[in-house]
Length: 271
Image 1: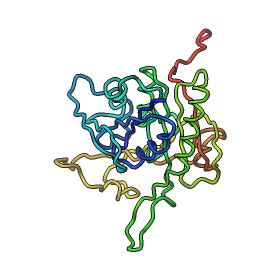
Image 2 (image 1 turned 120 degrees about the vertical axis):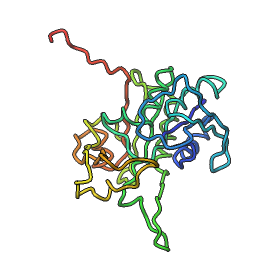
Image 3 (image 1 turned 120 degrees about the horizontal axis):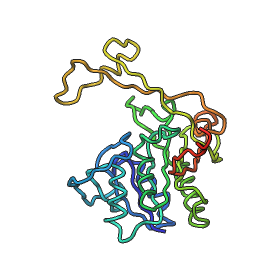
Image 4 (image 1 turned 30 degrees about the vertical axis):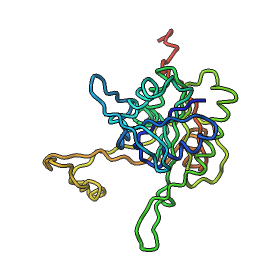
């Protein structure tokens, strides 16, 4: 199997190396990803504009391609330009975060997989939910660092790709959305449906005392401080049994959601 791997965290993010390591023993792997972080850009495409494509090396010395574009751009360029033929499968990730519920349409990770499906390639979007209480640690000098423990995610991804090689994609499934918790209590994968939503979004300004520290993040270069507002998200805590959020955040086990890109709602005959 020939696999194209991309992501939205950037080509040098540790998750993309973990994804390559998860499947390189069972497939031929090509890595094409954005040159910088592109989180929450959705399915943005860069059309009729020049894009810089450069060869680079991952941390293990293996070759990759860096693109000055979006995750969706990277899939198009990887599948239609870098590789000699279209890949059999696209893997987007391993994202350092969480991608669940109907909010996946804003995810660069999931939308890279959607772009793959649009050009006839089945795909897997995969994310590691890093629990802030367990993933952020201090070293012996008191310095904070992020503990990227991809081991379970790599195992689940490897097993999923192996099953796809053996059996192909299930009928009616265009892509899988896989989420794995860092603080898992069970390694057993639950097949789930999308939750209603993942994030509650609040708009704040300088008068919000509860989120004053967040609002006072440094301004971007040249940005005027007058009239500024900010959209701040909070992770939803209540999820229906059987949903991706329930598996990931309540039962603390991997969630695998089979998706179809046809969002048509049928049954308007009696409307």
